[in-house]
Image (tube, rainbow over the protein chains, first blue to last red):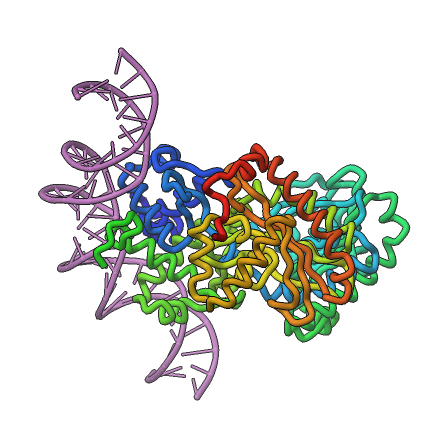
Length: 264
Length: 264
DNA sequence: AATGGCGTTTTATTCTTTGAAACACGCGCC
DNA sequence: GGCGCGTGTTTCAAAGAATAAAACGCCATT
């Protein structure tokens, strides 16, 4: 097993890799004993013990008060708060305004590993509403978030997502995305969740690459009435967030940059 | 140096400890180059490189698309979501109801390392409102969250917090906490933030230990009018959350358990 | 063409990491 | 009381993983 695979495998330091195993051996928020963890990660007891000590000293795991168990530590929260902090901060006021304006759930997401990842969610105050969870993943193709970003993606990224679709489907999707791009926002009509509709728009970076997306989601019955209004508000918010993030604007997008989606 | 605790320095595995250094070398959400990180953690370039590779393969850091930088990875989010998950989930519906009822910001927090740690926050939809951040820390003594928990703490924990207060202050605080305990909720009248008032109640575990706390926070002008109403709603919610978490109830608290706060 | 910046790769040496077994402690059971 | 089994902790010599330094390739800038 000592072959030289992708350049990365040869450079992993084992102790760290095992430590991450340990860190990931915690599910939910239950506490586990040393032996349990040791068994779960298939490591020697003393080895596990040392790794746990190391992680515990840094706050990534914690010992329970009685000292007979370990749980995840708060250091993780602290670190996670830094993930895309600028984006979350910049987007927050706009998300807030959107939620207030329509009183529906507002979502911020990025694409990661070919999946959509929810970064922040401001929930509607209505009893019947969308209630997703930060950190959750969702498919790109069936969400307004994903589609709005895809509509601004490069040809390569676009094709990568499309390659496992039938000709018919991909043709339909191309048309939909073209329309979304021209319009400035995308839809999801109960494709992801029955009864739930979404409107989404992309936040673009300097080179017109989609960096993130904003969406409003809620029960179809309420959403359909305001789709256009929401779409315009979303697109406008995204433009401002983009500017707020230091991106020079959407000018480059119109001058035919090669980064632009080629639907040909 | 010569501590015998399990957390002793003798059991940390160095490679892991350095890896954590690397992980913590990321501030905000900016991307850093290998050299920059290497310098920041005072480690050899190749060592840093390997640690980064290891972390990157697991998703704890990510390479930027152009390959010239590293950022924090989403795995952190994923892991952090597990931290106190049961508590967050159990509390959410109650928090949601409270926010809807009063339309003020509702907070969930725990005590950690002698500090208050915000676990979840549902914001008011009003333009003028409290807007804290998950993961943020705050002092115990000046928040309704902290005080509500302290009011139910054991004598030891209580004294630990009080020990650096003047006699006069600690006497006043004792009285305040006694009142809070009898009442079931605590106040913060602009002690932490000027213009901001809070009402908080504690979630108790099986042995009447405070496990977490809920609070409502907002501009004094609005808050003062509804303090009592809010306090009662909070206390009731906390009782139910406690039950929902599988805690048998508050009975043991009244039978004079030694865990009870002794103000004598 | 030369320079300096970057990330990557190689190597021999070293010192960390490691497994196994023993230790200490508490608990329930005969 | 002694036994067995359950924890978490400690030790120590052996093994091999982690390491520093220097070389490499690559791309800008000059």
